Image (cartoon, rainbow, N blue to C red; front, side, top):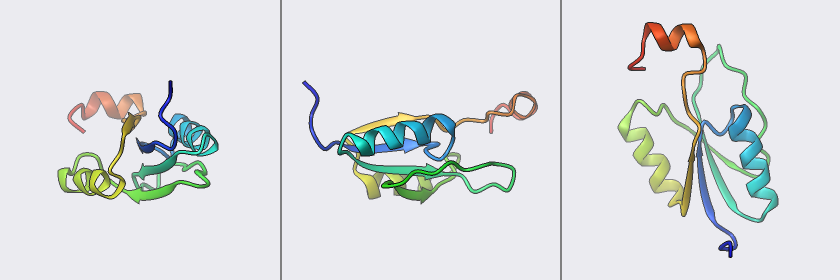
Length: 93
Protein backbone atom coordinates (compact mmCIF):
# COMPACT_ATOMS: atom_id res chain seq x y z
CA UNK A 1 0.00 0.00 0.00
CA UNK A 2 1.35 3.42 -0.99
CA UNK A 3 1.93 6.02 1.72
CA UNK A 4 -0.27 9.05 0.92
CA UNK A 5 1.15 12.53 0.49
CA UNK A 6 4.80 11.64 0.14
CA UNK A 7 7.50 14.28 0.18
CA UNK A 8 9.28 13.72 -3.13
CA UNK A 9 12.61 15.12 -4.32
CA UNK A 10 13.42 14.73 -8.02
CA UNK A 11 16.94 15.54 -9.20
CA UNK A 12 16.89 16.64 -12.80
CA UNK A 13 13.25 17.42 -12.21
CA UNK A 14 12.89 19.93 -15.05
CA UNK A 15 14.22 17.53 -17.67
CA UNK A 16 12.06 15.28 -19.83
CA UNK A 17 11.68 12.30 -17.45
CA UNK A 18 11.90 14.34 -14.25
CA UNK A 19 9.14 16.76 -15.27
CA UNK A 20 6.89 13.86 -16.28
CA UNK A 21 7.48 12.20 -12.90
CA UNK A 22 6.90 15.51 -11.08
CA UNK A 23 3.54 16.08 -12.78
CA UNK A 24 2.45 12.52 -11.95
CA UNK A 25 3.50 12.82 -8.30
CA UNK A 26 1.75 16.21 -7.93
CA UNK A 27 -1.41 14.72 -9.49
CA UNK A 28 -1.19 11.87 -6.95
CA UNK A 29 -1.26 14.42 -4.12
CA UNK A 30 2.42 14.31 -3.19
CA UNK A 31 4.47 17.36 -2.19
CA UNK A 32 7.18 17.65 -4.82
CA UNK A 33 10.52 19.45 -5.04
CA UNK A 34 12.60 19.34 -8.21
CA UNK A 35 16.21 20.34 -8.79
CA UNK A 36 17.10 22.36 -11.83
CA UNK A 37 20.56 22.92 -13.26
CA UNK A 38 20.62 26.38 -14.80
CA UNK A 39 22.27 26.13 -18.18
CA UNK A 40 21.67 28.14 -21.34
CA UNK A 41 22.14 24.94 -23.35
CA UNK A 42 19.28 23.15 -21.66
CA UNK A 43 15.53 23.34 -22.28
CA UNK A 44 13.52 23.18 -19.07
CA UNK A 45 10.13 21.48 -18.98
CA UNK A 46 7.25 22.76 -16.86
CA UNK A 47 6.73 21.31 -13.40
CA UNK A 48 3.45 22.91 -12.20
CA UNK A 49 2.78 22.37 -8.52
CA UNK A 50 6.41 21.53 -7.71
CA UNK A 51 8.93 23.68 -5.87
CA UNK A 52 11.98 24.30 -8.08
CA UNK A 53 15.39 24.29 -6.36
CA UNK A 54 18.37 25.55 -8.39
CA UNK A 55 21.04 22.89 -7.87
CA UNK A 56 24.26 21.70 -9.45
CA UNK A 57 24.53 18.08 -8.26
CA UNK A 58 28.32 18.33 -8.55
CA UNK A 59 28.30 20.72 -5.59
CA UNK A 60 27.75 18.91 -2.32
CA UNK A 61 26.44 21.96 -0.45
CA UNK A 62 23.74 22.52 -3.08
CA UNK A 63 22.64 18.88 -2.89
CA UNK A 64 22.59 19.04 0.91
CA UNK A 65 20.47 22.22 0.69
CA UNK A 66 17.98 20.50 -1.65
CA UNK A 67 17.70 17.54 0.72
CA UNK A 68 17.32 19.77 3.78
CA UNK A 69 14.70 21.93 2.06
CA UNK A 70 12.59 19.01 0.83
CA UNK A 71 13.17 16.50 3.66
CA UNK A 72 12.11 13.75 1.20
CA UNK A 73 10.48 10.42 1.86
CA UNK A 74 11.63 9.30 -1.58
CA UNK A 75 14.18 10.55 -4.14
CA UNK A 76 14.05 10.04 -7.90
CA UNK A 77 17.57 10.68 -9.25
CA UNK A 78 17.35 11.76 -12.90
CA UNK A 79 20.09 14.40 -13.01
CA UNK A 80 22.68 13.37 -15.59
CA UNK A 81 24.81 14.53 -18.47
CA UNK A 82 22.57 13.71 -21.41
CA UNK A 83 24.85 14.95 -24.17
CA UNK A 84 26.82 11.85 -25.16
CA UNK A 85 29.85 13.70 -26.52
CA UNK A 86 30.15 15.74 -23.34
CA UNK A 87 29.79 12.67 -21.15
CA UNK A 88 32.73 11.01 -22.91
CA UNK A 89 34.95 14.09 -22.96
CA UNK A 90 34.34 14.91 -19.27
CA UNK A 91 33.13 11.73 -17.48
CA UNK A 92 33.65 13.19 -14.01
CA UNK A 93 31.15 15.94 -14.66
